[in-house]
Image 1 (cartoon, rainbow, N blue to C red):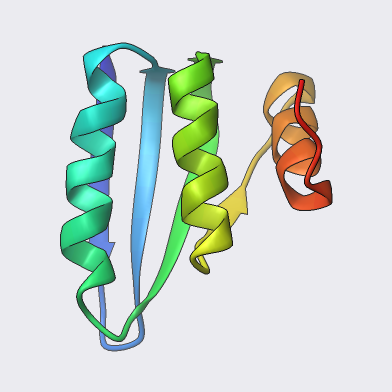
Image 2 (image 1 turned 135 degrees about the vertical axis):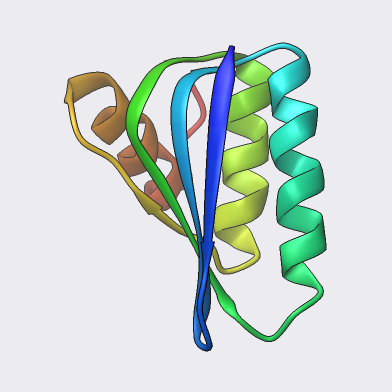
Length: 91
């Protein structure tokens, strides 16, 4: 299960994620992001409350990052995943 909370203001869109970024929830986030990407606003993804990210979830985060999204993480696992994405590493 993944909870996606969206906050929008004049300058940007924030997606706050809680739960598992896995399975069908990856497509749900992708749909939300693609709708947001059609605007001129910046995108920020808060991963602080994510408990698990599968390979498809990681691939989506890579795509989001390469298209300008800012990824924000806390905790060892999430920070490590974001650092690998930023450095262009694949696990």
